[in-house]
Length: 66
Image 1: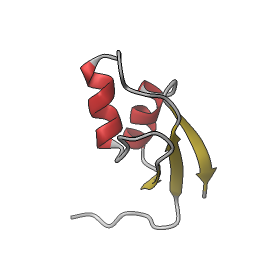
Image 2: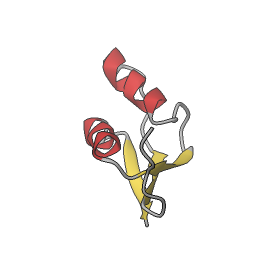
Image 3: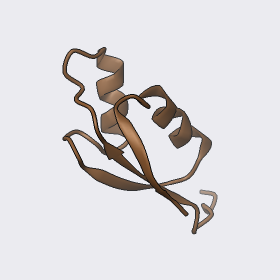
Image 4: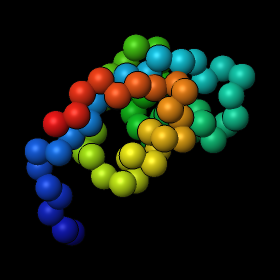
């Protein structure tokens, strides 16, 4: 497997509930490691993670970028 670049991370926090949202948005939150309000996850900053954040941007917020 290719080595990932360490040092580039992004922290996201869930601010909205997936209740009454399409199932794909709920699955995207789970893919990001979020499933309850105000949970935070520090993730590797990759284009795929950025796309997932953009998909559920109304349910999450970016807390920190390093």
